[in-house]
Image 1 (cartoon, each protein chain N blue to C red):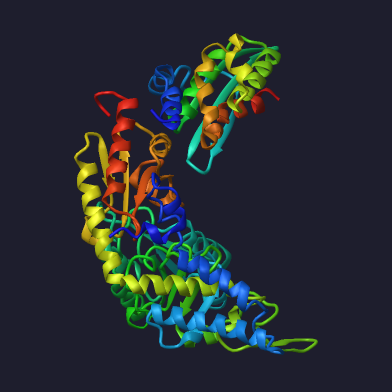
Image 2 (cartoon, chains in turn orange, purple):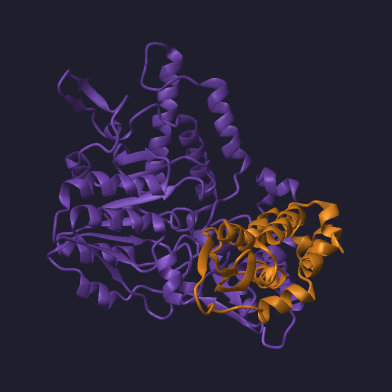
Amino acid sequence: MSDNAANIQAMYQELILDHYRRPRNKGELEGEHTTVAMKNPLCGDEVYLHLSLDGERVSGISFTGRGCSISQAAASMITQAVKGKTAAEAEALGLRYREMIMGDAAAAQDKSLGQLRALSGVSKFPARVKCALLAWNALEEGLK
Amino acid sequence: MSRRADFPLLAANPGLHYLDSAATSQKPRAVLDAIVNFYETANANPHRGAYELSVKATDAYHGARARIARFFGVADPATVIFTRGTTEAINLVATAWGGANVSEGDEIIVTAMEHHANFVPWQQLAIAKRAKLRICELEPDGTVKLPRLAELISPRTRIVAFSHVSNALGTINPAAAISEMARKAGAISVCDGAQSAPHLSVRFDELGVDFYAFSGHKMLGPMGIGALIGRRELLEAMPPYQTGGDMIEFVNDADTTWNVLPHKFEAGTPNAANAVGLAAAADYLDSIGMDEVRRHERELIEIAMARLAAIDGIRIYGPSPEHRSGVVSFTLGDVHPHDLATILDGAGVCIRAGHHCAQPLMRRLNVPATARASFYVYNDESDVDALVSGVMTAKKIFGRADV
């Protein structure tokens, strides 16, 4: 298998395809919340992140939108990962996630990222980095 | 016979299957050599004429114009206005002709398959002039609803703008029939030729359209050069698009008079080297023959469409091969086109995934994006094999019965 083909197999893990086809936390959010829209005009990916905070804590989070498997699976996994965390914890996680997506090998091994590590293969595909970061960019904006 | 050897980038990358020529084509050695040769032997600012080298540059530039005129069947080379490409050419017409001739209550008609470059300039012109933009819808097979177009065209119509060939679907539109409908109603016709110039034999003087815009980089030429071809009486009556050097006749303190065609619309130092490169591209295409270019693409498109259609889960958009240029737009089950493009890239297959700068069309097809493979003179059946095999890999990776 060529490097390319191996990298592709590594990126499209079962877990990612599962989140793409059975997204968690997908839908509108009940009650008062903020919504941040992020779009990738190049390929048409759209993520609308819905977020509510109870004090410092992420009490409610969901997403709507459409796009490629990476953008949608990332949104699904990210909403799972930050639910119940404080804003500061979520931001720290986001920083580590960004490092992993940008190719930081140590971050890709960091257990604190949990399931999100399944997305580490994206770093080999510069054209897809934006897809993996779309939901995080929305979350970051929403936590401001 | 494979023409890959004529294209340095393809020759250097034997495993590369370049199927994105609708975005930009690869360049033959002859084009690259012509550009280098201009800079090595004739480089000076054209039209300054004070010394022999500038005369040489001027001759090279206008020689290129004459060559392009011949390629497109234009008897009067001064009506070939060099631009940066199709986008600038269309904006030129929208700004200069539209600015002077469109007013409140007038109507501008476009089709639902237009590239943003032949949609947004008209939409914005309509907004600025309080005119109305009307969109002619498509048949289910992605061809223009001609009876509907006939209904839309009225004495209020000032402009009918349409693509000769759709970049997203490959649909070949009946340019002569559409321009005839426009002419009878007293409207002008503007033909976006970005996707027809590279693939069809275009004879502007016989086509009947008032304006024809194209890009050099899609027809084996360099980026940054293209042209607007227009009817002389329209071009002469239009105000300039940009002002500056080269396009003036005389500058008084209070006003200015304009240079003759084509200079009136070519402000600033011209892109002479790339015009020369474009002329070399015309030479290359004529050495093959545009009828042969078309035959070759149609053959590949028929094979590609048949083989893709045989794959479970594939949906192909647009008309049958006889009404389409070398473009196949498709989707594969719930595999997003962007994922498909990444997987194909892993097999050395370059395709485009996205809305193809045709969002109004994508809305009507009810898809956010499609995958698009486009063929040209250097492609052969091995590229179809690689495409089909890459699609099968995507199917395996996303492996589910309903894909």
